[in-house]
Every structure is written in structure tokens, then in C-alpha cells.
Image 1 (cartoon, one colour):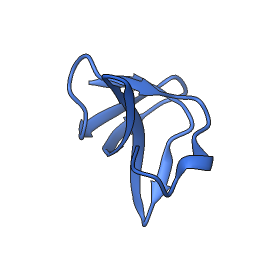
Image 2 (image 1 turned 30 degrees about the vertical axis):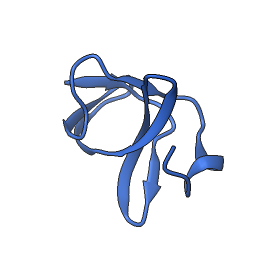
Image 3 (image 1 turned 90 degrees about the vertical axis):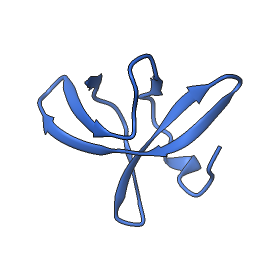
Image 4 (image 1 turned 90 degrees about the horizontal axis):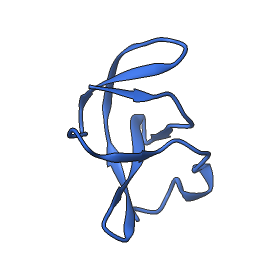
Length: 65
């Protein structure tokens, strides 16, 4: 599965993104594989249909949702 590249987080040495689930954006750990200029391959952590926030979320690095 591929996602558009954005401002992903690195929390405690692991990659994470915020995924919208219902009315909440949850920080979700992911493992990325092949990455190019436009997309990143999500190996683990996401399922088809997940809505990933690709804008800058660095302000929220230490919160879970």
C-alpha cells in the first residue's frame, strides 16, 4: 500500500503518522519501505482506506490523539 509523502513523525526512533478514525486523529506507528518523491510504501501499521494526515503534525509528536 502506498501513501502520499508528507510530514511524517519520528517518535522514539520509530516512524508514525496520524490517521483519522471517526472524529479522532490517532498517532499510528508505521513501517515504511520503498519511498520515492511522491509516495511511501507502508509495510505495516495502515490498512486500505485509512485517512492519513500529511500536513505538518510536529506540534503533536508527544500526544497519542
